[in-house]
Amino acid sequence: MNLLRKILFPFAILYGFITSIRNFLFDKEILKSTSFDIPVIAVGNLSVGGTGKTPQIEYLIRLLSNQYKVATLSRGYKRKSEGFVLADATSNAAVLGDEPFQFYQKFPNIQVAVDANRTNGITQLLSQKIRPQIILLDDAYQHRKVKAGFYILLTSYGDLYSDDFMLPTGNLRESRRGANRANIVIVTKCPKNLSDEEQSEIWKKLKLTPSQQLYFTFIDYDDAIYGKDEKIAVNEIKNESKLLLAGIAKPTPFFNYLKNENDECLTFPDHHHFSEKDLDEIQYKAQNKKIITTEKDYVRLKDSKLISQLYYLPIKSTFINNQQNFDATIFNYVKINLES
Figure 1 (cartoon, rainbow, N blue to C red):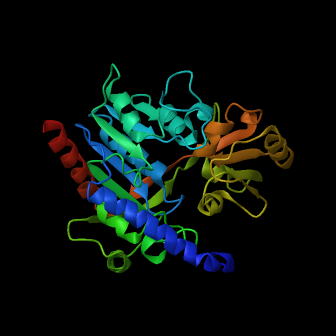
Figure 2: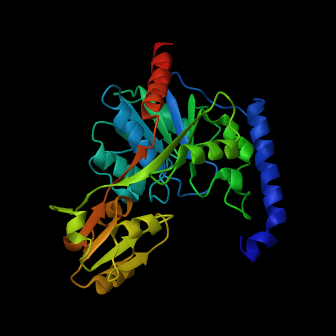
């Protein structure tokens, strides 16, 4: 913890007090939450950024969309549009935000919407001609004006919410007690070989209630990169000199998976909107080399002048163990709430 964050500790106490009062008012129904008559699954975290919400939402889409009509609803962080927007053929990352546009491009059989007002967003989705059966709320753990039927809380391995502090001293958006709202807690970005003993230690640290389920996942990188019209195996380009580009919260694992000693790594802020000056800098540093970026960055760059040398590396969330139990829990919640 750096000196400035230590100095700001009194503000962290104040911020924690304010968020605790807000949660108390919602818990006691003094502040009202809106419930809906279909399954609503909220995925989020207690901390700011970087816990792997996008691959977890994509996991749920793959799990559910073959059997049910699924919609995702996101805020659309840093988009240039306002209000409710339902993705269609005219949409792009500027209109939807990078992550929702990624959902729209990858999963054409689902509905993708954005709205900072999640209550309005759900209402609008339910008024569409094609009415979804399930709505996945992206990054909505603190959006308590909607009462989701099921909450999945993510926390990163090595950066557990139980070891963190409130903003601005730490990275927590609300008190650790907020974890009590979760039906499931997933520790993301784990080592693939995480032992049963370490899993047990993390369980003790998180102090979950008997009714809560705990799972562990790791980020599984694809064995190929993808360009506009080309797919190349990672092992073919591993030793090739290239430019690695990332505008995500925690890019180090992405760089480590691909880089060699001759590569240059270029980092931008999370959800960065690339300006013409940025594109010129990237092009200058890349020269004629391949530019490999994250899937989230690719959707913002694919219409730029970099496209002829631009590639992306897909990722997915993979369970270390007990995946079948997780899937069964989700299907059980959906089935019960569709029949009720």
